[in-house]
Length: 174
Image (tube, rainbow, N blue to C red; front, side, top):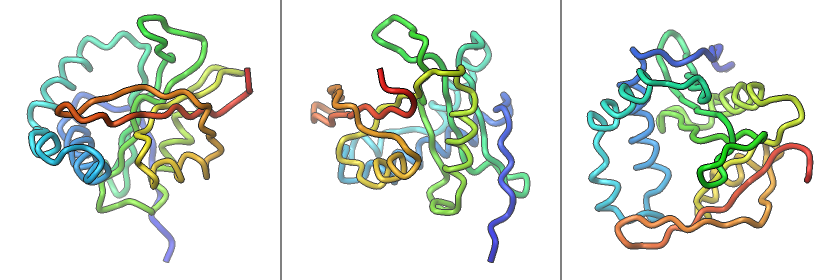
């Protein structure tokens, strides 16, 4: 059976609660056994939504938030903007986040979001992202989309436990 049409559109303020639910449930699903469970258990949808509404209200236009809808229901979210090299923004783009409702994984929603996010990158720019080193499913997803690990690693800690990230890149080599 064919999957329903996925509509990608800009996120609105009204989407913040649903996007936060997708993000928190996505973390709890994707990072189970990679991040300490108490850390994941403390993630709070309402608090995340409040922070998201505040950030959205003062948006600077640099970050593009997209949602994926099927049959009028938001099932995924992605955020893309200038690559952050410390406090410096570069000419490259960065996929800051991409999450799909865990109940809808494997149905092309992530691919549609990734393609739309990549389409928002400046011509000739690379698209970079950070992914948890141990997140094999996400790494396979990005590799199937043409991304490659470039050897850069960054430390990340959750409750004092190291959870390293690796950088992936799509686009022209430098």
